[in-house]
Length: 77
Image (tube, rainbow, N blue to C red):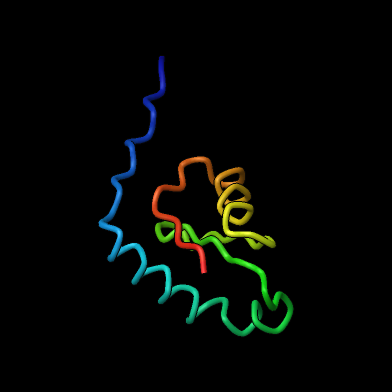
């Protein structure tokens, strides 16, 4: 028996992904990020709420995609 691949996630319009990412960031991560990670970047998968923090935008996005290979709509703040 063969297991089917999960369906591919659809990409959201950029504006919607940005809005959702900001909502998640402000609601769930802002206090802890600003307290202990000043000047760093946060990449957020807007589908799952998973996040990664790094010193650069690309570093945060790369870390997030390493832990969540299917991340489609990623916002970096």
